[in-house]
Length: 259
Image 1 (cartoon, rainbow, N blue to C red):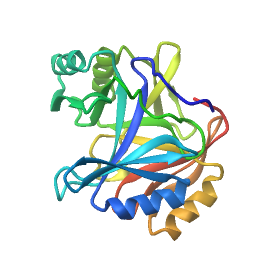
Image 2 (tube, one colour):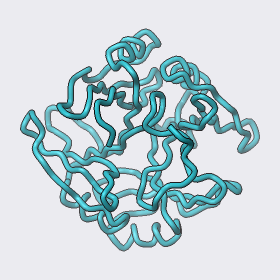
Image 3 (cartoon, rainbow, N blue to C red):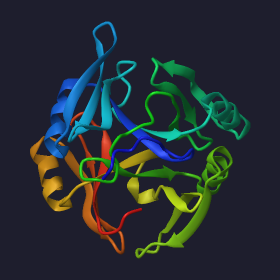
Image 4 (cartoon, rainbow, N blue to C red):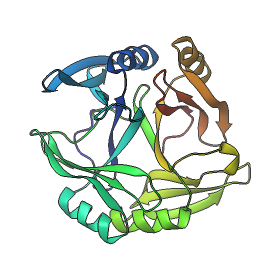
């Protein structure tokens, strides 16, 4: 795929991992996805590891901002003005947990908590638009919100990013909502099921792989866990939900159609 140099506002443009073991996470994901790390100093004794696939940035791995916090993947949505987006998030019933700030000369960001409790980051590009590679093996392809209140989430994100919601039934009888940015799918949305146990609302990330069964086996071999699957999504692909050795949750998918 050609190198991405720009993202339409309202499009997921970046993902990064905040982890308790940056070195271990770099080893795990590099062996899983074929990534190579480029460590960028951001503070004394602190680096932001840009993870590249075939020389193109795909994601990043950083140490936890505060010790003891969970290892989590964060998803970023491109916006025209991050300060305006943060202000709008508050007006829609969300909160801003990290106020707008400059990220060197690369861009400007903020972290928002939606009214159901899920965190999402907004990114105003300057020198950096986001990931240089998406959808290809080793790159992210989809972002999905699991929430306790689908209607409240639809209203919030529709107001924040002008996303439109299209809902339909899954083969197992559950309901799935596709959030659309114009005529393009932007992400997914579904309710947390009781049988999944205690789970906070969260945005999850899917990475493309060539063979999901092989990749799931590799996750286990590298010390991670496969929490669900591999299983088919008719008309879309085959996926598995996994957990890295530090506890970060992510999904892998072998696509039959592009989103």
